[in-house]
Image 1 (cartoon, rainbow, N blue to C red):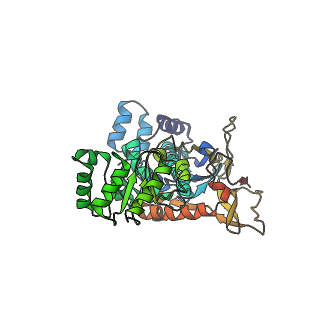
Image 2: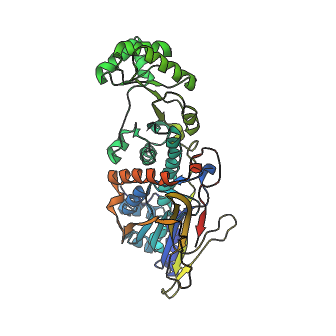
Image 3: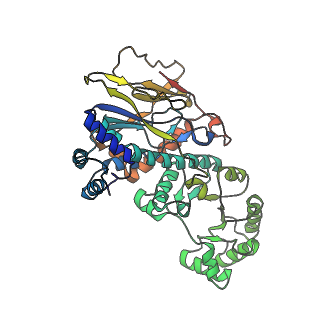
Length: 439
């Protein structure tokens, strides 16, 4: 499926005007970065990079797209001819998917002609902003859960396509499973799910519903015990499934107190190995509040997939360098608008660490200009390069794609978060956990 029309009209009208001015084929460097972290959080998690590479590869204008543009008189004939042959042939580099980022981090750099690179702005930002928002929220919940598994259950709280992307991003950030089957099929994410209250209400009694579920799924299933009375539900669940019942799920009530009561009741009934899963509009703060309770697993929906819990990452896509009129020298360019200023020049990034703990983000101007200062690393620090090649001559590196790319991003995210100082894991609003240094 083409991604070519998943863009804003002005991307195409800029190309038309640049073709007329003769500047459309000038070599340029565009950079994706965030001016600040969403919600005054202390770090962000980059997600969506693999999907961006897929979207760039699929950015093609076929006859249906060209006919639409012509019928609506959106661009002229010369631009239509250019778009008909459009293929991105440039280079993309940036942070690995799953990497943590901070204000000013050059998470993605697109190198190509103005015309081929500017067209990608909207689709790149629409993927990275939403996926990274979900991953950043999910990472906070994973930290709050302190090693307990969390399942993503938010499909019904967002769009049908966004649900699949959200499940992918949450898994990269450390969630253990998703309820969304398409995410499982497409990205290789473990799926989970048993029954909702409707299943219990369908039957003439709670016991009948439990017996039907156990008959279908076995005693290792998880029974939802709060449709009517929780205490009676737990008693019925153990009576039906026996002490080897896999788990019970609580979806309402005063959870800290209720969890303790249910644990005590399960133990008294001999179901000492039965796990307790908690759902019910959880976020990182309610998960943290349950940390001292005997909860075994969490299920999170709304707060991880929607703006209420995952405010937009705020990435922007800016031109930072271009060739001069002769095509020989790179010229740094920057926006000077108040509150929205950018730093000119192509960049690469490093994370500075002391004894394995991150202490700063270092951004280095990286082009062929003479006289730029060198990045000197103090003797007590090490520098971990953050910028890697993602796409070369229009061809994506297969390491970052598909289920294998998701698995690699998940592993990398865990390692990157583990490098952060302890203060980064605080759930309160605050300053970024690392300063960003520019060289």
